[in-house]
Length: 350
Ligand SMILES: *Cc1c(COP(=O)(O)O)cnc(C)c1O
Image (cartoon, rainbow, N blue to C red; front, side, top):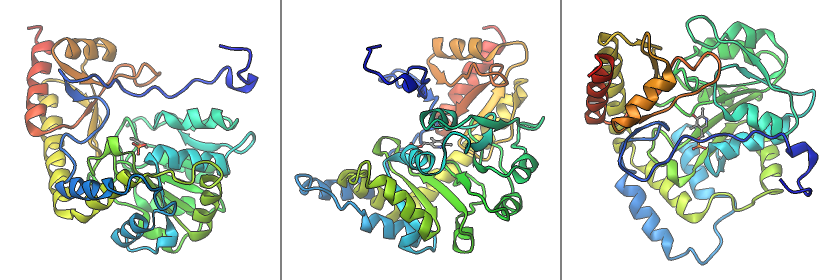
């Protein structure tokens, strides 16, 4: 560390992304889609290539309109971002600081505490309930701005919309990170039309098979979108490049492919949940594209290592509460059958 780094950043603990090995593994560790992006996205991106010498539209007007149309909203309700991580960063920069934290679930997306510390806000969390679901009453009762993923990250549990509506009746921001909502949960995006304190964050990284394209978005009342634009235009006006915008438009244009991919993931998830339970695993019921699970008698870290030795990569978190578990991304049916076979061998000691 040099003497130049500011004091306030010396203790910063950054987000730790999942491993990204170059091939050789069945990769079930970072909740990506097992399927390639839509062909339509490829065509769109090819067409964008010829204009890459020119700056992109800083408003990303075309994609903004496509997203607004997809969710039945106005383009003024949408801001596109460089991954939803950037959307979250803008939200923390705009609305959180020391003495003004966002309350979040204790077990959730690992970036929330990182952004809190980056902007100098306290890390304020509420424990999950016994069944690993988010404690909606704690969020309804508190007066802070709140943020949570729904379905929640790492657990896959889903909070019913009626609880979110109750949170919205207080004058504070309710930020719902819907990274996994397409895998069988209910979205609160339509509520943005009538609620000026609801912020929904979305991504094309999971259900639309574009993790490497880095495309996310915010859905909110016009005033909030305008405030987030203050941050965006003070930071990185061309935040979403031409290639990414073209990919995203292509992905949204191919609804058929999108729903096919999502259905396959849901089918593979239900297969996996049942199959691993038959092997004696304990699972948390998931509405997302991953399952949190543990093997009685084997620690999560050890199980992750054993799977890795056999060519299957899953995620393990050593944080309290999660260390007995592994988080397994749902891949294709074929990948999940292999995963179950490998897991069976490990459990039976073969
Ligand atoms: C994956 C994920 C994100 C980040 O998505 P990007 O759009 O790839 O930056 C945000 N929130 C949650 C809960 C996630 O799981």
